[in-house]
Image (cartoon, rainbow, N blue to C red; front, side):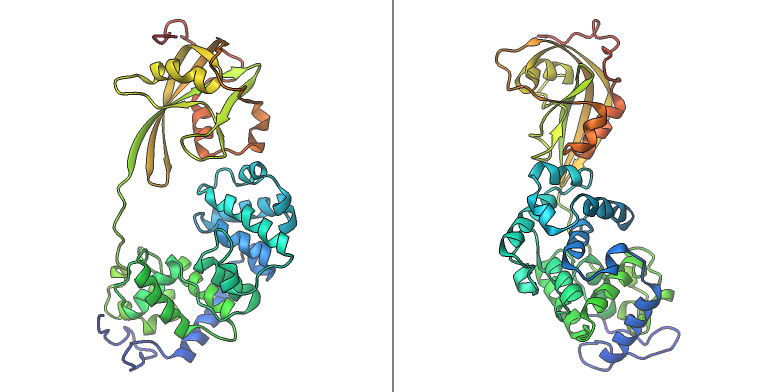
Length: 384
């Protein structure tokens, strides 16, 4: 651990303790006073009811606040309480979550809501909360401290950044042992009388001031105790995590309309539970049009007699990077070996089905409904 120099610009001096931890009481006072003045006016901060707080914490795990606020409001308008979420179908929940990504969050929310509804009361401790599907140490600590005043520290990426800079800890956010070190330090600083506010203040500091790049140290209420700031090495902490190599894949996406309704099928490539236009993986040496000619009947139930390329889009799901070639498809007769009838959805009904961001990208390139693709007769795929 680096030995920090005195704080730049004078002010409060760091504690002389061996751990380099700042004086706890003044640190708490400054941080909480700053939070009361500067915190963002976010809608879930107006309640201590566990259900809306839970939804906000899960939603914001992989979603920005700018996107999260309107989507949180829309989700609560659709499922205003735990009972309505528990009573919904998985398809309804996925439809409400469409476009937010990381869809395991929605499936786990639904499973957890059903478990809590069957028990009759919301768990009140971090230990009990962490037993629910999709609720890990961070979410459990956030709900327990904010809603039930349990003095338990939260550790997310923002907290790791603040604490590692404060103490010049060479921590890697994704490394379990380092997160436990940060948790121990955050616990030592935690306000036992206002644990929810303290946790939110620490996260707010990381989200708005102690930024990953170009931190706003002049606006930080606790900069006087920050070891990384004292050394002028704020961006050296925390240490970067090793990047997982991404996988690159290609898909052919076929867009077909039947009577003005879009042909959709269950997603078997990107996100289980979603509906998507038929997707086929081209074999080695096979063009996207040839791939659709080969595989269309197996996924859409009719022959593909023509497939006209419209363009290419990029899409990512976790560590997978997809190149998706979009083609308008002209269908022929029903294929005897085809599956049961796919889902046909009118354009104004697309918002009510579970879908991901790829569908919007694909439709932006494709021709309008009810019109055969231009050039279809000239671009008949082999084997069609």
